[in-house]
Image (cartoon, rainbow, N blue to C red; front, side, top):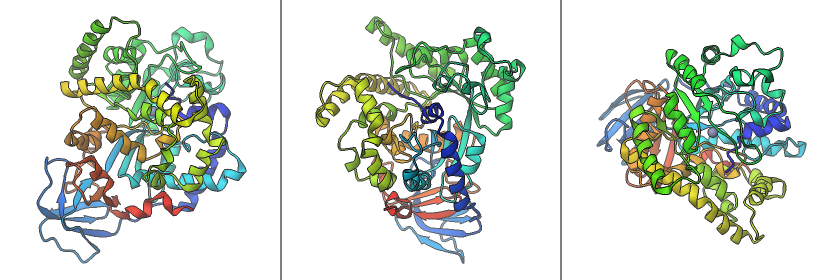
Length: 511
Ligand SMILES: [Zn+2]
């Protein structure tokens, strides 16, 4: 399976600088957000607070200076009012696995695409909001990029994890040999004694010990540390991985600074590695079981591992939409889904369907060695090939959930250069994938709100509707605890007290 990160491909082809400068220019046009002074009184609404299990009776919510000031009956205010009679108010949603840099599937920088890219960069943060995501965690973020992102007026608030890597391992291997040793790629690189000969002269070992890189990450404002256990896929295989001792030292240093550690891993080996190293979160579901293992004995081991994961308190992000999105790249009907036109601007969608925009689909169909060129047949064969890993990840997620593991909501948007994993809409589809594992709507709701806030250590500020918390709120016409389609009934998106009618956030504003 693919899971090549967008940012890595761009680094390989060296287009990052140009895209970044375009992005910076765009931020300058948009200006900075300062719209906190307004007040807003939301009248007669059912509150699903994230603390109580059921919608409340009709209540009023007073928002002031970006915060929830009061909740009660018959509140008054001289400011603007929003009559929400009989509707549902829920906390803004949190996606704790995204990658904000770059337009999914666009890896070059052609002058004729400038207008299309400008629209795409303007729309992507709005697409997160359109689907209700008001907070996101970039798992491989750069401090400057995140600071710029947070200057935008209509955007989810972003936090980031610092990626702690080793040379020639995943994801550094996607860069060329020298680039991986220069900043920003090498900023949080560990010194790996097994590869001592590979480092260039200028690399200072003392600045790359576990505690040195973790300290640097904290000083840069990182909310967490990301580490990797990945032996490779596609053209890059048999990659070096960090030792248990190295990651144990990273975990120890991070926990001293109260930073959680997130581990990239999607194989049974990676899960064993997580158990040995004491990381806080595994950022993927398990889609590769041990190959050639005695099937029955291995099923027993997986059950046992699930119990061990619960005992160790390790949280899991199933990210089922990673596999599903790869499969959907081959779906000839993808762009006919009516939700897509709200996420992806028309110009970009047209480009995705052009020969230039179909490169990843092309690569994927070659990798899958599809014998047919008929689009419908290609899709059917692809679905068959993805059935096994999809079954594995769904079964393991169901097992973990039944055992009481912490299942964390993260969509991995985008997990690679796939237009099928566009901001916002990809998180909405990950919700569907969760329900397919048998997860309850109330568990999903908690994972999208208060549980993610806790995992990010932001539960004093966001994740529920309580006085004193930030006014990140969604007004829905349907109850999301009755059906997942409740999340499609968003009418208003309120970010730090500022109200955005949902329709105003749709990509359909671009022609
Ligand atoms: Zn990811």
